[in-house]
Amino acid sequence: MTMLRRVLSEGFRIFFLAACLFAILAMVAWEIWLAGSLEGFPPGMAPHLWHAHEMVFGYGGAVLGGFLLTAVPNWTGGKSVPHRFIAVVAALWLIGRLAMWCSASLPPWAVAVADLSFLPVLALKIAMQLLVRPKPQQMIFLLTLTLMWLANLFCHLEWLGLLRDGVEPGLRAGLLTLSAMIMILGGRVTPGFTRNAMVLAGREDGHPRNPARLAALAIAPALLLPLALLAGLPDGVVAALALLAGAAGLLRVALWRGGWTLGRPILWTLHLSYALNALGLIAFGLSRLDLGSEIAALHILGIGGIGGMTLAVFSRATLGHSGRPLQAPLLLALAYALVPLAALSRFAAATWPAVYIGATLLAGALWLIAFALAFAVLLPAWLLPRPPRAPAGRPPS
Image 1 (cartoon, rainbow, N blue to C red):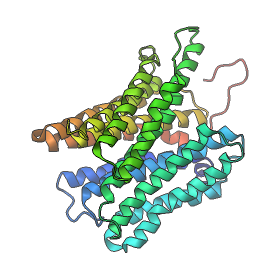
Image 2 (image 1 turned 90 degrees about the horizontal axis):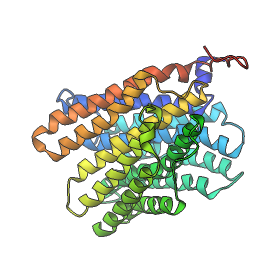
Image 3 (image 1 turned 120 degrees about the vertical axis):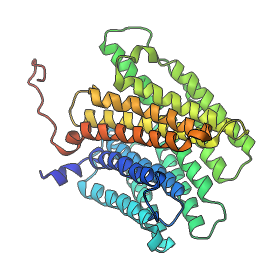
């Protein structure tokens, strides 16, 4: 099997590789512009709008693609996705990114078509697979894909001149849809993986608790938040939804025995990222009541919650699905630690204007180092064959 075919053989390989690389390249462009070294920013929009759009729909879209194309066949017991389809949908994602970068020289309708094509094709394939064995807890991911696409559509409708105020609510709705995904997915894997590790370690009691009613109390308002923003509901309604989801999320993570994971980076990063996602929702809700900076809240969500959780999930999935031990090497553990520090630095930038440029550049640098470390550690798992299994009774070397 050629390396290219191997990379396209499983969704996690091409899309997690693309997400990690794009997280680096998009941040490099933003850092260069912010430092004043990139004159005439290529995209035909304000630099901060391109930055926000591409981190939400570019990076976020790639992570969603890798996760769903890998997880759904396992859930349904069906065949893995053919490499030809993975190549097509990966090409659609890439075309969208190139169109957004070259938007100054392309008609707005062409940019919209290019950028909006990826998610419907992905969603159709995921729907066909899920409908084989439909389960409500899995079908909900089709709702999140729909919300992501609608949020992106709002952005392009304004750029097309068809909607007066579409970009700002669209960007926030896209970010909050990813946050809702963390409420759903993180709320499953974090206590589940922690419980499994405790059992393997011989601990028979004190396992994480994950009450269904509390989960619903966190997930339902989190899913309603993007719709509330797109519908233009009053700030009081948006604030109430965000505060409820965030408070319930904090209560959930408090029941998951996070203290037990402190010596296990591949686990504590899940707990910390979920907690930051919940804190970000609370901060966002408060900002809608004129209590605190909305930009600071959005970056707690975007960097600490979404950035941290997606890095944690795609690195763990890469290690597991490539046949490698589910243990974070030192450099990957360092990457896990740098992401929340980046969130803290960006929070400081938004909170204290005197340090805005320096703290924002520092946040970007920490993000870059984190994803560069992850890229270096995980690249062999994306490009190379699975390592051979050790013979029965003999531990792997």
